[in-house]
Image (cartoon, rainbow, N blue to C red):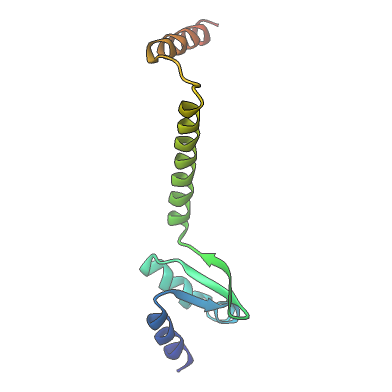
Length: 104
């Protein structure tokens, strides 16, 4: 009955929120729920968000996307600061480095 009431609360709020005590007592159930729905679950302590439980594959994808966004932001900052070179020069330098690496 407690599980049903809690799941009804989750549906009303639109977020998967679990108290730390609930997760500790019913980890298998909560793990299965977020693995099947692929929705992150917010873990609360004293009714405040404390941590987020994610499906491992989703976490890895999110991390890769954030790293790519950081590279793009760094690139935009380089362009804005004028730290750019013509593409032909860049490719020539890369070819030279690769040739030196393969020869040496």
